[in-house]
Amino acid sequence: MPVVEQLVEFVRDHYRTTDFVPLHAPVFRGNEKAYVVETIDSTFVSSVGAFVDRFEKDMAAYTGSSRAVATVNGTAALHVALRLVGVGQGDYVITQPLTFVATCNAIAYCGAEPIFIDVDRHTLGLSPTALEAWLSEHAYRDDAGQCRRREDNRVIRACLPMHTFGHPVDVDGLLRVCHDWKLFMVEDAAESLGSTYRGQHTGTFGDIGTLSFNGNKIITTGGGGMILCDEEAGKRAKHLTTTAKRPHTYEYVHDELAYNYRLPNLNAALGCAQLEQLDAYIADKRQLAASYAACLDGSEYNFFTEPEGCRSNYWLNAVICSDLSQRDQLLQITNERGIMTRPIWQLMNRLPMYSNAPSGELPNALWLEARVVNLPSSIRAHHAGEA
Ligand SMILES: *Cc1c(COP(=O)(O)O)cnc(C)c1O
Image (cartoon, rainbow, N blue to C red; front, side):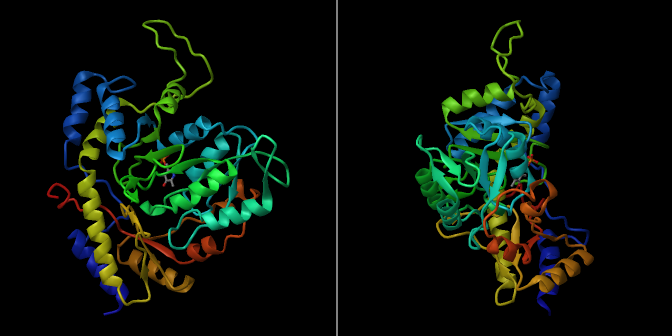
């Protein structure tokens, strides 16, 4: 049997269905309903309520972060994270061209501009080697030690790597370059909740890390996000996400321009229930990844596996095809057969709003853009409660 046919059969068998198989659908088999009903019964569905505090504490404990601050979505978490490290008007933030658009939008919301640096093929994330090479050629440190771009002397404030599909970037390599060039590091860990690098959770290495709980992520709150940081930054994050209101029993005093980015209690209730099941979800996903690898073993489809020293949550499974025509063939056959598959994102430097941003050479990003296909990766509904 041709390997794509084998793949289609494997997916149908795994999900025990002859219906359409989506790329990633949420599963609610735990305390979700009970906790959401609890918020409705209590009337505390909105900006005040016990589930927000609990979700933040549980998430900090799970990831090993000193503090976790919930937000209305992952993009808002990224926006505030960049503000926390001082990204402002006219600054540059270095990121990868291979990411979801939210990463770049958060930079633009600060009045800053992205600089695109290539990814590594073995992590799918920002390459420390490419970063170091680009900085050596195009940047310098001024008398105050601040990193600036040679061409226009504008400040390069931070570096924003993303853990693609849950696979950790080369954290040590990036931390070293960021230290040498005095760049803040903010981790976009929207896709990698539960993934570890040398035993430590992604999102806890940089100055700040962010998570997303959108409907397609490994756990969902409907919409939601989280900022992972230290105590000091946490206080500031809470202030910035809650309209900078000074604590007071009855008076409204707001001491700076800030945002209404807080996560409603209703959504946090869903998050608490989902987080209780995260380890079971990861186990299910890792088992699926191993099965995909076995199914495609020896074929011309190269199943992407976690980088060395890492434990990935395998949020979205991916194969690397040998070329563009093979990629298109895989996409066409699987989608025709009701198995949803998808190419990786179009590179950010091609989007109209970022096409003028500075960019290094991007051979690996271009290579991957033509070859990567995501495979169905939902948690099994008939399995999630049992693990
Ligand atoms: C999902 C995601 C985000 C945040 O998305 P929201 O929908 O705003 O929660 C940010 N970056 C990446 C890479 C993502 O995949």
